[in-house]
Amino acid sequence: LPYPQLFVVERPQCIESGRILAEGLGAQKPKILSFSPYDLGIVDGLSDADVTEHYPSIASLMDRWRQGEAEIWELNIPGATDHLEYFALAKRTIEQISADLT
Image (cartoon, rainbow, N blue to C red; front, top):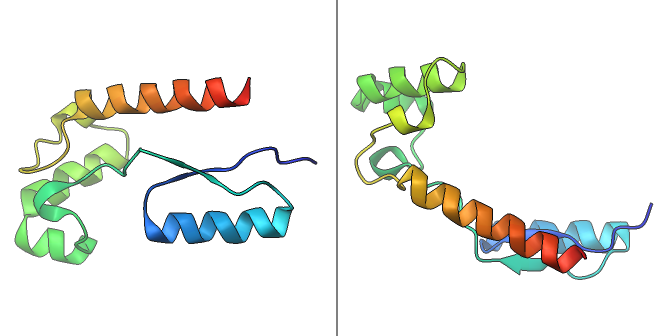
Protein backbone atom coordinates (compact mmCIF):
# COMPACT_ATOMS: atom_id res chain seq x y z
CA LEU A 1 0.00 0.00 0.00
CA PRO A 2 1.32 3.45 -0.82
CA TYR A 3 1.71 5.94 1.99
CA PRO A 4 1.73 9.34 0.27
CA GLN A 5 2.10 11.48 3.39
CA LEU A 6 2.44 11.09 7.13
CA PHE A 7 1.51 13.95 9.44
CA VAL A 8 3.01 14.53 12.89
CA VAL A 9 2.51 17.11 15.62
CA GLU A 10 5.30 19.49 16.47
CA ARG A 11 6.87 17.54 19.33
CA PRO A 12 10.38 16.06 19.19
CA GLN A 13 9.23 12.51 20.01
CA CYS A 14 6.45 12.68 17.40
CA ILE A 15 8.78 14.05 14.72
CA GLU A 16 11.33 11.30 15.40
CA SER A 17 8.66 8.57 15.43
CA GLY A 18 7.25 9.94 12.17
CA ARG A 19 10.68 9.92 10.57
CA ILE A 20 11.24 6.29 11.60
CA LEU A 21 7.79 5.26 10.33
CA ALA A 22 8.25 7.10 7.03
CA GLU A 23 11.60 5.42 6.43
CA GLY A 24 10.20 2.00 7.30
CA LEU A 25 7.14 2.47 5.09
CA GLY A 26 8.99 4.09 2.22
CA ALA A 27 6.84 7.21 2.65
CA GLN A 28 7.67 10.84 2.18
CA LYS A 29 9.22 12.81 5.03
CA PRO A 30 6.45 13.55 7.57
CA LYS A 31 4.75 16.90 7.40
CA ILE A 32 4.84 18.73 10.72
CA LEU A 33 1.54 20.21 11.86
CA SER A 34 1.06 23.14 14.22
CA PHE A 35 -1.15 21.02 16.42
CA SER A 36 -0.28 20.29 20.00
CA PRO A 37 -1.64 17.74 22.44
CA TYR A 38 -4.35 18.84 24.84
CA ASP A 39 -2.69 20.47 27.86
CA LEU A 40 -4.11 19.11 31.11
CA GLY A 41 -2.93 22.11 33.13
CA ILE A 42 -1.92 21.34 36.71
CA VAL A 43 -2.13 17.58 36.14
CA ASP A 44 -0.32 17.53 32.78
CA GLY A 45 2.55 15.04 32.86
CA LEU A 46 1.55 13.54 36.21
CA SER A 47 0.94 9.83 36.62
CA ASP A 48 -2.57 8.65 37.43
CA ALA A 49 -1.36 7.80 40.93
CA ASP A 50 0.01 11.33 41.46
CA VAL A 51 -3.20 12.93 40.20
CA THR A 52 -5.24 10.68 42.51
CA GLU A 53 -3.02 11.53 45.47
CA HIS A 54 -2.79 15.30 44.94
CA TYR A 55 -6.02 16.09 43.06
CA PRO A 56 -8.58 13.38 43.95
CA SER A 57 -11.60 15.29 42.61
CA ILE A 58 -9.88 15.87 39.27
CA ALA A 59 -8.80 12.21 39.16
CA SER A 60 -12.39 11.11 39.74
CA LEU A 61 -13.69 13.38 37.00
CA MET A 62 -11.00 12.23 34.58
CA ASP A 63 -11.95 8.60 35.28
CA ARG A 64 -15.59 9.42 34.56
CA TRP A 65 -14.56 11.15 31.31
CA ARG A 66 -12.45 8.17 30.20
CA GLN A 67 -15.44 5.89 30.81
CA GLY A 68 -17.70 8.14 28.74
CA GLU A 69 -19.66 9.29 31.78
CA ALA A 70 -18.53 12.94 31.61
CA GLU A 71 -18.09 15.39 28.76
CA ILE A 72 -14.83 17.17 27.97
CA TRP A 73 -16.26 20.55 28.96
CA GLU A 74 -16.83 19.19 32.45
CA LEU A 75 -13.06 18.84 32.91
CA ASN A 76 -12.49 22.18 34.59
CA ILE A 77 -8.80 21.64 35.32
CA PRO A 78 -6.87 24.78 36.28
CA GLY A 79 -4.47 25.76 33.49
CA ALA A 80 -5.86 23.23 30.98
CA THR A 81 -6.42 24.06 27.33
CA ASP A 82 -9.83 25.58 26.67
CA HIS A 83 -11.83 22.84 24.91
CA LEU A 84 -13.47 25.25 22.43
CA GLU A 85 -10.11 26.65 21.36
CA TYR A 86 -8.75 23.11 21.06
CA PHE A 87 -11.67 21.97 18.91
CA ALA A 88 -11.20 25.01 16.65
CA LEU A 89 -7.50 24.17 16.28
CA ALA A 90 -8.37 20.53 15.54
CA LYS A 91 -10.83 21.64 12.85
CA ARG A 92 -8.20 23.87 11.20
CA THR A 93 -5.68 21.02 11.33
CA ILE A 94 -8.11 18.59 9.69
CA GLU A 95 -8.83 21.18 6.99
CA GLN A 96 -5.07 21.59 6.43
CA ILE A 97 -4.57 17.84 6.11
CA SER A 98 -7.55 17.55 3.75
CA ALA A 99 -6.18 20.34 1.55
CA ASP A 100 -2.74 18.70 1.46
CA LEU A 101 -4.20 15.37 0.41
CA THR A 102 -6.30 16.74 -2.45
